[in-house]
Amino acid sequence: MKRKHQRLFLGLAALAAIGGASALALSALQDQAAFFYTPSDVATRKPDVDKAVRLGGMVEKGSLKHLKDGVTIAFVVADKEAKVPVRFTGVAPDLFKEGSGVVAEGKFTAEGGFVADNLLAKHDERYMPPEIADKMPSPDTLAK
Image 1: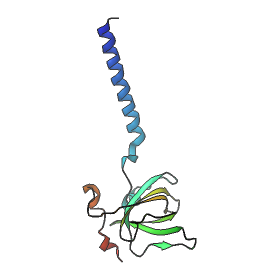
Image 2: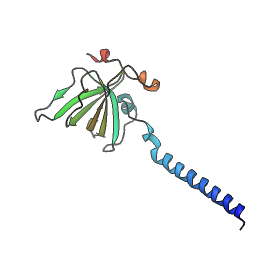
Image 3: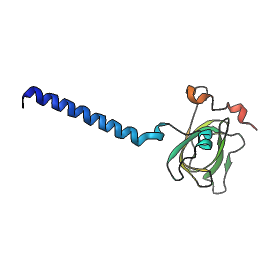
Image 4: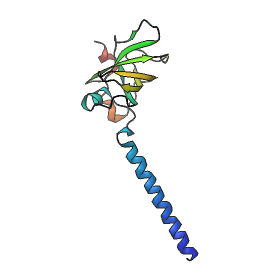
């Protein structure tokens, strides 16, 4: 085989390998390409129970409760259309409070609640990506 044909063959093999790897990665991601589910996403399309996901929204005012064990908190994550009860055991971030944005990492329960392993507090609600800005209420509208 000529040197020119060897280079062409190796180039085509490399492109095929990159294409195959890309196809595998895209098929593995499918619905998980989103950064998080909103409560209205959960209401319309139930995520699998005991599957690690992220839930994002606003902490509803008046819903934050510290349980008797001292390390578990219960609260409600809401958007304009739906609410999801959340339970978290651990140390919450300093910026975590009622009326603020939060992304909770964890799993849904069979009862429809969410058990969080980690909380990510959002420090600024003034900017939101355009595709979810219309789904999230302002912190003032959550005070009910």
